[in-house]
Length: 319
Image 1 (cartoon, rainbow, N blue to C red):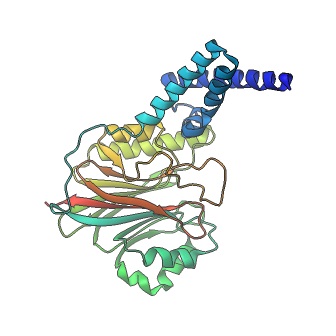
Image 2 (spheres, one colour; image 1 turned 135 degrees about the horizontal axis):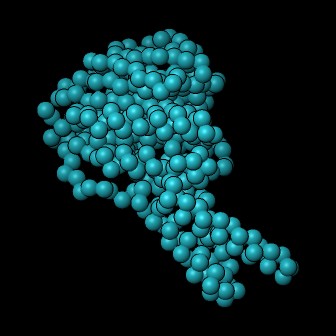
Image 3 (spheres, rainbow, N blue to C red; image 1 turned 60 degrees about the vertical axis):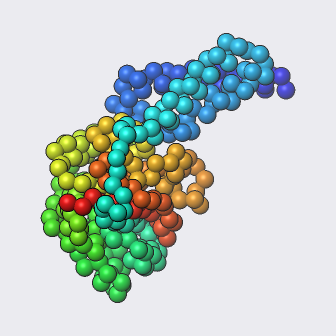
């Protein structure tokens, strides 16, 4: 038993030493390599061995390793805190000084076998704007056949069978519709005319940053978004399946550009849905420019999808 106990302690020490190297690599390289991106994506979970080592070191009175594990825990805490501390103190509009808009974003899942149900679920919601990813030709057929689609007279649809289809359904006029591409990856930008003002909407869905090729595409995709929003003059919302968590570099860069999250909760996971047990992550986001107010936000189960739907009620100032 003592041998097993010693083996566990030694194993945790080796793992925590590697995690310390990971923490140092994050400071110098951040998301430059795909393996670092994956590790940073898993920030809420990957440093858990440090907490186990701290408890075991305290029990064994191994104060050197206790200090080491506490240092690692402190670094972990700062990483968690950094993603959710507001970058600016904002004077946001209220419902009395702006127009309330309800936006829902949902990754439908290209192989969804319950498309009729999820279509009914989305169209019967109180949303003003639906932002959809993995929009397939079958999904388009389900939307067209549902009489509730008449509630959304303005739309943009670009169905694809490879999981990269995008769509937007709106109760308000979409004045401009533009699709930009990074290789074959589409990025939608539209201007929506509200009763009080205009709203710029981006619908995003990059590939997961697994492997060198996808990582290059992932970085180019978000670099394009960063360039676009840096010159954007209007109220802006970026919604979709980002395939990144709040602990990745691009998310923090968007924060520095004056965006905040429409779902600012630490373990507000959106993928995979609750029937799966392994490492749930918050990869779906609604980011709003800081001249917009946030009245409420949340998430719902999307039938047949591997992602939850997310929603935000934002307040757009009167112009």
